[in-house]
Structures are given as C-alpha cells and as structure tokens.
Image: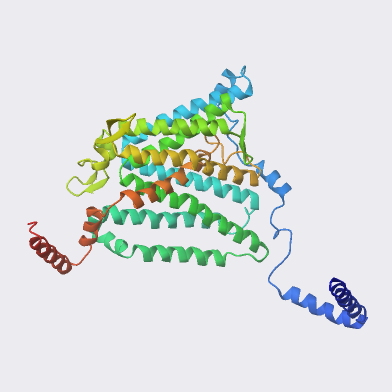
Length: 455
C-alpha cells in the first residue's frame, strides 16, 4: 500500500511540473499583467514604512527611552561613589523606597479624596509610559493625530468609569443640580457617543502606507486602557468600601516586593524564572512568608480605627464624604474556639484577619506574576525600565505592575464574599425616580413592613 501511495504522489508531482512546462511564453506573458493589475488595485502597499519593526530596530530605538534603575541625583551619586555598584543601587533603592512609603502615609492621612486624585495621577503616568514605548518602537511620530487620539481615548475612558462612580456614590447630591441631571441620566449614552467620535476620528486619520502601524498602535492604546484605566476604576471602588480594602492590599504588595528583594539580595542562589533572571526562589519564599505575617499584624492594627474600616459615603447634611459608622461584623473581635493537644482553647481576633490571610497569599503567590508579565513586556522591547521618574526603581509602571493585578483580585473578592446590597446605592436609585414613583414605592414598602409587624 505504501509503494502505491508513493507512485501516486510521484505521478501527481510529475503532472504538475509537466503542466507548468507546457505553458507557452505568450501564456505566461498574459498572466503577468493580470497579476500586476491585481497588485496595483490592492490597498496594501508593501513599503518599508509599512513593515513592523525588526528586532534590531527595536533594540536601537529602545536606547532612546529613559531608564531609571541606574539613575540617581548627582549629590547622592558622589556620596556613594566609593561603594560597589551592587551596594550603591541597594542604598539608592532603599532611600527612595522609604520616601515613597512616607509619601503614601501622608496621602492616606489627607483623606480618601487625596487617594482618589493620586490614583488618577498614577494612572495617567502609567498610561503615558506605556504609550511612549509604542511611539518609540513603531516610529509613528509623524502620523497624523495619533498622539492626540491616544489621550482622547484616555479622557473618554475616565469620563465613563469615574462617571459610574459619581452616579453610584454621589447620585443623591448630583441629582439636586439641574445642570448635571441630564449628564447623570444619560451618562452611558454620552460615553458611548464620545467613544464613537474617537473611533470615527481614527478611521479618518488612516494613511495608506501606515495602515499596519496605525492599527497596531490602536490596539496598543486599547490594551493600555484595559490594563491601566479599568484597574484604577476598581481601585477607587475598593476605596469606597473602606480604606482598609485599599491600604492592606497595597501594603502587602509593597511588603512582598521589598522583602523578596531583601531575601534575594542576601540569600538568593536559585533562579526563579527566566523572564526575570534576578528573581530567586529564596526571595520568592522569604517575601511570601514575610507578607503573610505582615498582613495579619497590620490588619489587626487597622481594624481598631473607624477611619480605616468604615465605607465612604457622601453626607448630604455635612456636604462632604464621611468615614463614620458602627463597625460591622468583620471589624469587631470574635471568639474562635479550637482544640490544641487535646484541650479546648479560644482566641479573639477580627474576622477581617482571616480575609487578610487570603489577600496575603494571593499577593505573595500570584501578585509577583504581574511583575513577571511586565518583565516579559520590557524584554520584548529590549528595555530595562518603563521610565526614569524614580531613581533606583525606574518608572511609575515599574512600581505598580503588581498593584493592578491585586486591585482586580480585591474587587472580585469583595463582590464575591463580602459585599451585600448597599442601602446607599438603593437610595440613590430611588431619588432618581419621579415623585409619583417614589410615593408608590414608599406606600408599598410601608405596607410590607406593617404586614411583618416591623412598624
């Protein structure tokens, strides 16, 4: 059977070659113009400008991007000039880590509004760093409107997401302003219209010989929006559920990053992952253990303060956001009994500490993969850092690559295991109804409460 199959394949091959050899020169000349006409009629132009950048070109262009790991103020560089490069980087990194943590504490003390503004600023800077890489790699500085389009989509996305938060948490106050009532009622429609304007703008800006680059950057912009804007929206939602849901996860990522660096610096011997050659198993395990312990201790301390555990709500009487409440079940000490060596024992802890354990395990096991993802991204484009804003660390995105993944997990965790129906949100929806519908709802609710002997 195999011999017959081989003979058939040979006959087919000979037939093909024979058919080609029997073509007359004039037949070939007739086909050539037809093929060229088809190529000319195509919109695609295979020019040098159209081709995506080669690896060697990416490497050359990456050299023009700012890098911050080895950057430091001149005064500090002179003071540390006698140290080896390894220890010099360690000291610089330590100094600016301390400054960032101190600044973070000051922002927390300034209140939730300061945290939200900081989140917005960090988001804008991260977006700028990601988009700048795209501009450099794809060499599109001369393309019409593309930089403006990227920032337009950022503004449009923020209008949609921050508007959603405004409607959810400040709907009662905003609805009192006649000038904003229309924008609240048709917020999603207006957001979609704004996006359509940007979409049409992009299509009209297409240039024939730059199609591939323009569509690549269009996709690049939307991926950046997905990574940065969506996550910052989730972070702000976490803040509204209580500052503790923001501070604890963020602090866990910082602790894991710092302690993994310390353990790896002093004890690291075994490489962890090829994407990030400096990461070691010793750093990964040591950082994870330190994060779990830190999370439990830090959560216990924060649970004692209303400022951190109360959900943020807008007070119409005070005319501002307030952090006052009776702490819920999660933030009140509870007795837990257990058996140890045959004897019954009990311990009093805050239930939130058990949830904190879940958060710390995620931040130390899965969280670092956000950093590995960023490392792979940087390796793909032959760069060491996203920017040079923070000496010893790189850009803002270099410090927040794990935070975005953690923010998504916390938001999903809260919605799955913690959050219940919020009376504040229901009231916001009720106040948007017409007066006759509000009265109808009131009568129905009163009737139901009376039937159950609640009132």
